[in-house]
View: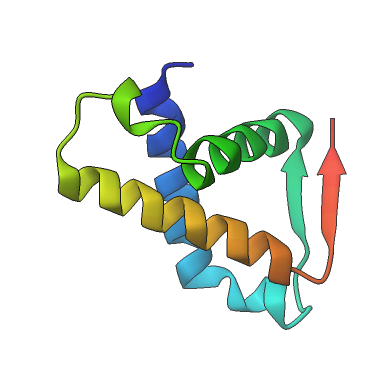
Length: 88
């Protein structure tokens, strides 16, 4: 999967959780991720939170800020989630 594709998937996931994530946070639904999705998120968290990624893509500063915002949102969401189901 290309870097652009990884960030696009993460941005769509962040948007989905912004709309529906309250159900996970309040415990009425569980968040279920595959091991590959969890590994992808972990990789993105490390890259973005350690600021290792901006030079890897040829994108505008505003796009870079949007990606950073989405990844930080996902990171914070995962920390607030009361449970996580991991499937293979």
